Image 1 (cartoon, rainbow, N blue to C red):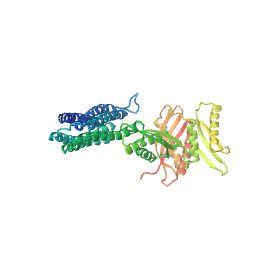
Image 2: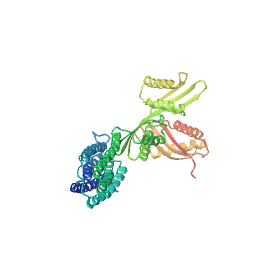
Image 3: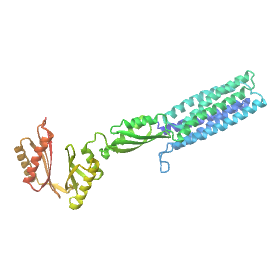
Image 4: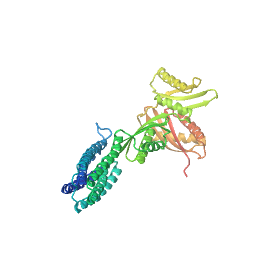
Length: 459
C-alpha cells in the first residue's frame, strides 16, 4: 500500500507535467489566433504550473515529523504555500481584468476562429477534470491543503476553458467583445475560487477548530471508561493532524497506572473519531459522590506518601471512629514516627471534621527486598507437619500444600496453600486461617511472617 507522503508527492509530480503541457499548448494557440481569453487561460495554467511545483516541494517538507524547532510538525507549510498561490492568482486576475477592459475600450480586433483552439480546449477540459478529481480525492484522503489548492486551480481551469469556448463562439457569431468578456469571466472565476480557498487557509493559520472536530473529540473522550467529566477541549489543525488539548476529570482514588491507561484509551478513541490525531490529555483527580470514607482516607494517606492498611471506620451517628495501621521505617525513632502519625490524623480531621476520632497503630515497614534463601528440606517438612496438625484441630481448613519456608534478614517467612469449603465466607476463612498462623508463630518463634492462600477444593 502506498504511504500518504508518497501518494501526495506522486500526485503533485504528475500534475506538474500535465499543467506545463496544457499551458504551453493554450499559450501557443492563443498567440496564434490573437485570443486574450485563451492567453489568459494559458497564463492561469502557467500559474498552476508554478503552484504545482510549489505543492510538490511543500508536501515533501510538510510530512516531515516534528523536530526541536517545529514541535507540531511542518503541516502549516502547506497553508503558507496555499496563501502564496492565492496571491499569484489574484495578481493574474487583476492583470486579465485590466487588459480586458483596455481591449473593450479600444476595440481590439477579434481573434481568428478555427477548429484548433476548440480541440485544444476540449482536451484541456478533459485533462483538468481528471486532474481536479484525482487531486481532490487525494487531498481529502490526506487532508492536504496544498493539494486542495491544486485541485481548486484545475477545477477553475475547467470553468475557464468553458468560458473561453463561450467567448470564441460569440466571436464567431460576430460579437467582437466576446473574447474580452470571456477573459473577464476567467478573471472573476479565479477571484471567487481564490477567495474560497483563502478563507479555509486563513482559518487554519488562525487555529480555527475544524467543523465538528470539537464535538467529536469531546464525545470520544467522555465515552472513555474512567472519565467522569470533561473540563476543556481545544482543537487545532496542523496539516492533516488534529492537535487536541483536553482536561478531563478522573476519580482521585485511581492509581497512576490506571490513569495512564485512561490516557491511552482516550488517544485511541479520538484517533478513531477524527483520523490523524495527537492528544494531550491532562487528568484532574476529583472526588466522586459515591466515594467511601475508607477511600477518602486512603487518598489522604497516598497524597502524603504514607503506607497504610487495615483501615477501619465505624459510624456512631454523631461521630466517626477511624482506626489505621501506619507503616514506617523500623529504625525510625518513636518521636519522629509519632509526628508522622499526628500529621496524618490532622489531615483526616480536616477532611471529616474535628469530632472524628482517629487512632493510628504504628508498625515497622516490611523491607522491600529482604535477602533470603530457601530453608533446608527438613525445616520445610517440620513446618508443613505443624500446619497440618493445627489445621486438623481447626476442622474448617484442610489439605495443607505447597509449603515454602525462606530464611531472610528479617526472619523466617512461610508461604502455604490450603483448602476450605467453597460456600464458606471470606470472613470465616480468614478467621480460621489466622488462627492457624498464630499457632504456627507460637510454635516457631523465629517465623516472622506467614502468608496463606486459601482456595476451594478441586472439582
